[in-house]
Length: 455
Image (cartoon, rainbow, N blue to C red):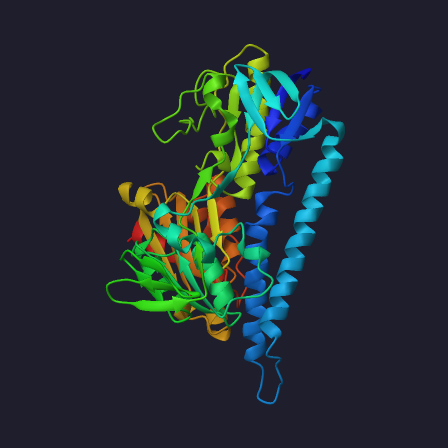
């Protein structure tokens, strides 16, 4: 077996892995990038990009159906838009894969990797010895074993965008962020969607007022069975979904109940890493390690912040951690950027900075702005817009925010920047606000908070 010695080996060529590769090459290190394929990041192939393309397709079809009477629409419109969505996905994933091939060149090894001893990988017909390793192998969808009887009719985010045609009726099991986005996208493409979740909430929303507003807004677009387990069985060529109150037959069932890190094939125990009862490493979010071994985990393989920009940050951090280890020093971690979450649900569901629960523990003041009092929201027919900001009492420091907001993606970014810059309510109230704009809702929320801070 061919042997090769390098400074650092990276396993996984997704967002975190390729970011780490660039950083280490720039530092002059001998590094290999290993991936079992297919290339193209999770985001581009099956995650954030194709789901947003589907949401855009749904928005376009909804807009088309709302055109004045007399406009002719093709019955094949939704299927044509779905084909365009898949073409967009293919173009994005193909471009990402090509960038990886170009960047890594001869340092890219396309094969499965597994540890055979501390510091040693078996990769295809090669044996790789490295002084440090970065594991950025991502994650995969989990399908509960209880659904095994309906396996032939189950889709996941890995297989949904491989479907050439949209089903007529689709069940969705799991209404977290991904399930809610895809449910709305496909419902807006005239798929009869039925969503279900054992939780009473949707979209992972913590703030109860935003949660109630989201349920009211999106509950009218497709049925949502919440707060009860769902029994799933095959019924001929259909899938039967049943709770104690509901029953329906669907053509396919999309399961989005969670993801599991891709670590099973790595044989981490051979590398000296202890695994828990589920066979997973216990990764420290600060050190990015699961033990004292020179192995650093980045991206979705550690599910603390499963978002593309966070994966890029973690890839950079993992590279610095590996370089630190090569110098014989201990990695102390690095500060993280303000967390930001955006669901492109139109209106968008966004959470920025400190969570609602954490803010309430600090007795935060809540500044509120409602779409019914915002001129731009009224013009857009979006009176159900809602913005809630969390402010530290005494200092007036902006801590976080939650919103259901038309074009909220933009305001969420502005708020993340303000929180990271440690701005206060008074700082932000000195900023310009254009009329009429959605951003004026922030001005209203700031005034609401200010009145409570200075009664």
